[in-house]
Length: 341
Image (cartoon, rainbow, N blue to C red; front, side, top):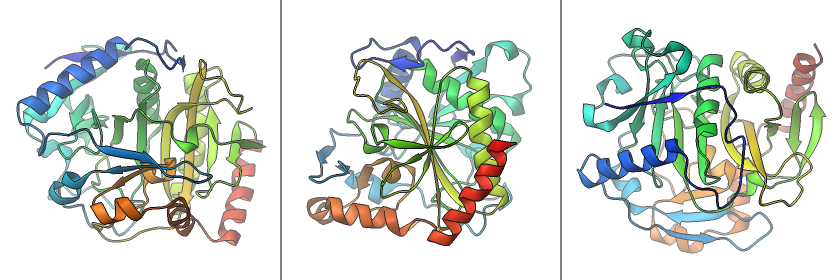
């Protein structure tokens, strides 16, 4: 198995639309294609039918019939604090050929115990090109709760890519995480997503708020330090976890805080969406609103729903996941406290 070193250099903090693939992109795409051609995936991923829905939001709908039929049965989730259960499916049980490569932080190269090693695994029921799972410290069997060190690792990984189309997302428990084992999703989709260009308003400290977006959320931008930004975002998601508020998170390239139209200078945006909890197992619906959907990317699993999906319907689905107004306003007061201290 090969490894990929990540470090704290911000080599691709901002990207251009037509920038050449980085070493990370080349490795990921090669290993993914090898897995696809050798039958590791449950299905070969075709060119998916994709369209931009007419309307003010600009949702990107994508028909993925195979994923709706052949994906692994999701776990039954009852709480944000649900403990890791080694008897259920987890990433220690994947086949060796599903592991694409190891991610090595330069300071730890050659020194980590097996339980602390980080792996990139193929999602064998992919939703898009190079759909991977970053599993930090796989052998330590952490539940699906963001930790500061795992979040810094995920940031380093997206910054290792020079491609604006590469995104990394996270679904908490009770926010349609399918496996209770700490992991982040990564994938490419060669379409602009609404959350990447949506205007923001400054809220408090490093935290901004999406303006009039159907999925209410908070936005952070990479300015100076990876660690500083990671600590700010972690402060928010840790608050959400402690307050038992489900959440989704997306890292992507987009416009800066001024939403200036500069396609040749896309910066790292991190969006966090607090939301209502969803209990039980994820159901095979037209769309379950998780991180992709909140970002504006709608994977749809049957033809009829793909044909009939509209901007209005998609906006309603996102709004239906939102916290009640009084809960959201109370949360904003709590966020002001953590960033004013």
